[in-house]
Amino acid sequence: MRRTTFFEVRVLNGKTKEHLCFLDKVEPYSTIGDIKSLFHKSYPHWYPARQALSLDPKDKSLRDEDVLQNLPVGTTATMYFRDLGPQIGWTMVFLAECIGPLLTYLLFYFRVPYIYSHRYALTSSPHHVVRLACACHTCHYMKKLIETMFVHRFSHGTMPLRTIVRNCSYYWGFSAWLAYYINHPLYTPPSYGELQVNYALFIFMMCEVGNFSIHLTLNNLRAEGSRSNRFPAPTKNPFTWLFFFVSCPNYTYEVGAWLSFSIMTQCLPVALYTLLGFLQMATWAKGKHRAYSREFKEYPSVRMAIIPLML
Image 1 (spheres, rainbow, N blue to C red):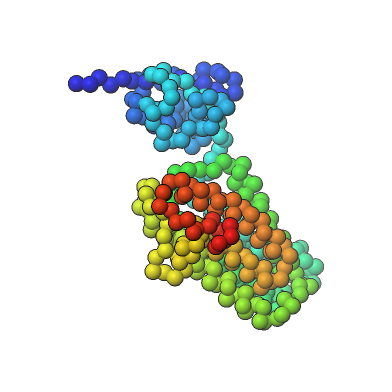
Image 2: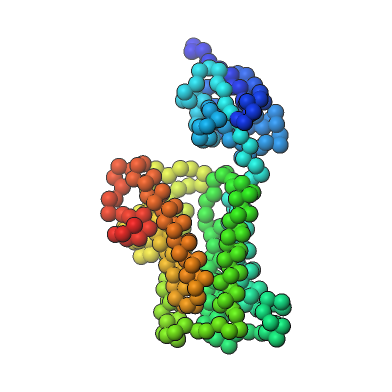
């Protein structure tokens, strides 16, 4: 009968090198996640999601799924701890990022007192496009809330509280800025009138349906809590056929929705928000595209990251 060799794990503070914890008789197939749980027993205020462990203070943090016996350490391992700060689950992150813009926009739409001149308090705009813009903005974030609660599959990952504050400031702030101008009493409708508004509205609706279709496809790609060994592919739903050309059509549709919203409202703050969103989503899409290309040898070479045949 083969004898099991246990490991000893010494945890030091990554900044001060102070000894924090010594874990004895750690099984060789234990993961970093298991080690974090053991460490948590000694320091209850540092829950696993708040911990970052590495083999050197300057190295990248080890992943929770890394197995102890597969790491370049002997039977006595030294790990360095770093406190990531208070964490919030991804579901709460998405809810916070969506509810804020939704409610903020409505404050400007209904012209609550002290936003504009007192004579415009609680009045409504005479322009049809302003009502359409509110409906589109509200539907967009309601869709994101529904996806957060019923469609997206989140891992047990978290986000630092300080990052959530920064993200919410960005989304809530931009929502207030664009809402201020779209709902302003002196707002001027688009140059080409109803034709411009209606075409932009049609594109917006198509992009929203497309974005939702892609999220459903990604949700069905893997079972709850498991990693998929397949890359996303088109289905019978025509909105998913964009997978033939790009790796992240959800971002393509998202950018398309905001671009059409910019055309519909002909509002500069919306256009700037669309541009910044595109730059960020293009970065995410290129990272995902590279990951797919590395993981799957048969990955379609014709696919781009976010814009068909271009980017």
